[in-house]
Image (cartoon, rainbow, N blue to C red):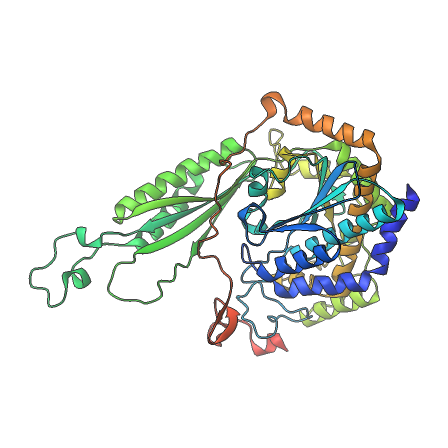
Length: 533
């Protein structure tokens, strides 16, 4: 088996430069949730050239895909790519703060970075394919394109549509984003429940708010129909939810609530009541019961806000996921392969770039600037014990990510590989967000993440393809953990339609050219000339 795994590892070593170039392509595209058109097309083309059959737009999601390649009968194993970026995080691959060339700082950037997630997983699946062909290993590979992870928008749809049916095991990989989950696999405490809902306030009939003035010099609908309108409803909802936040749930369990005001295009100020206003709430909780308690309060707040401002309310789900299910068989297997590959390590070029960042921030450059945990392995049970120190004994899940939906359809492992993070000097408040974003685009710093992820994924997939007893054990554990009273049914109907048609941020093309939806404008930019230099 070592010789077969060597085939996969050698493939990645021989394609280091190619993988680096691929990553930079996706990193530069930096397209946000549900609008990852160029990124998805790039993956479509690459997989088809590699011999995979590819269904573009799988599950009715224009920027999703489902790819498959088979080398004969055997297990079906899978992994996936993500490639969405985050608005407001545009950063050049540089050692100083500044957006990518020609873009506003309000454009998207890869924060986690999903660019390394997607290319690391692709490296793993293509290296596995190569080893299967060279050593005549039989079985089927599936590879999914999962857009809109930042709003947890695709995996629940793929699951509801049956795309994960018939898979024997799934590898879910993510670059490390918080300690202690670095260079390890998740053991018991997987991600919890996530909910996201858009509340739209619509003022359909402002003229019915009150009687018009009989002596109005202009049309009553223009000057006398003084309905509060949709903006008032939105800010009533916003204020009411802030005021009731402490009453939604007890202060325990690490739950959180965030909101985003969606721009509906009504940019002309006039003495007319706003017709449409939208706010998106997203909340994370350890379990469904807690998530539903928050939902009850938000729904009531929306109804009252709408009534107060003479608006009707439309409620639209973005996402609603179940807590994740552990699988110790796969966690142990994957970690053994990670240990055989080793943690990422940073060479002289990466260290020099990190030191330049520190120097440009006015810090004394460190001899070893990267966080030590990034270059160390951590046993899953040790990571679990450290994680549990941060939460009450009753809490079974923590944070959120939509991979949890996969765990209800097939045995799934959650793998974390270090992404480059710098050590914080004593007394320093912490690095600004652009530093981590920049490190995700600097090849000497991010490439080790991709190589380790690809090798770990490939060698784990090869184990699953050649060890039927391991697959059987993983599936038996899956059946035990999801069966009987433990089973939680999907929280949205099978025909759930995600809100693709809503006003999500995106790149746009007009007679002015291609630009981010918030154009670059000198009076909006907050980065000074000194910070750019």
